[in-house]
Image (cartoon, rainbow, N blue to C red):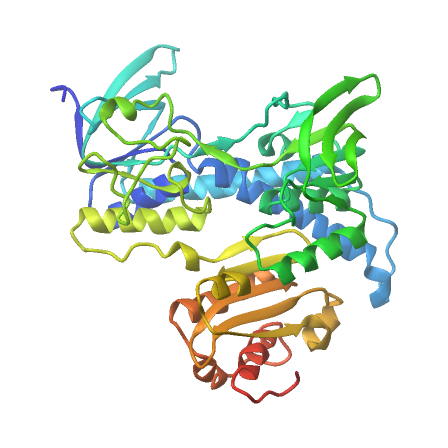
Length: 472
């Protein structure tokens, strides 16, 4: 350690959800914290992921609402989308949230250091090149008794489909679209790909969704994934699964995407290709391996259940580790890391029970085991499915696609809850609490849900598993 190094209890490398959560939670516990971030705090989630994507999807919801207004007796002219106005609003939302986060960090006396940080060979010093107002660069050394690595991730590309920001787009590029493309191929039918396909079809694009695996939303309960696939098809999205993408050729008219599908070799003329096949950890170039931090063959930092790396006193959280790439998972991991530093022996995150939200239309929210996973693990499984067609609030809203599905062990606790349909991403909170508290249908059947609400469908689904039911 250099004699000029600044001393802190914790130094955090990266200001995204995992990094700033570690900083805020650690500071609230009385630790002195420094956090290094080369851009504005907030990370991918706030600037290039969750928040901007959901703002654009909210724009799509407003469009759908206006298009369906006549069914409610509301006269409205045919709506059109000015995506430029939506982009301005999106950046206003991002800026407001970023300023709020900056204020929180300042209020808790977190030292935020702007610049690109590198972990020194000692494993406990972050070296930062800080750009001064006059253009010169000053090197600062931040030494921590503990270090939290939270450098995040970046969009993963495909061979032969290198991002150019104009025709071949990553998620970063899609979120800054200056205009709505006419013909789009979305490669990847996971959560992000389905959200983009949902937005673009509502915005007016001709959308083809290509997925390498047998179903879109792999990992989601099959019945729920089928709801989304049917709804997408009904809205005009062309879905092809079990596809192998070969590459792309540039033509005078745009692009031709080559792929092999169920009907053999195909060529799809498009204006834009969106590559949405996951994200890679940003573990290279930060000095991690040189400091002895173990990294696996995929680039993820290896950690134990307390988020400890192979170097004593060095932790890693968020997209840098091979856990669900969700902001709220990064929050939870950051809390585990800080509690471990404080000697509080926290329970590790139970990754198979975390809540997931997918904000396409219809929305998807789920936690715990799918029916197939529960059977594979040897449980004697019972399920209860209640569709929205019989729910009064869903009918009033004219949002009846989808279901609530509860998976439980026979005569035992809930194992998983899966929701497709209106406000699924909000409704899953009750399911998450139930699964994680290992509640039984009998426990939950005693509880009252307000009427008329969407949440009643969860109550009805659970009540049915007690052997008696009301409306279904």
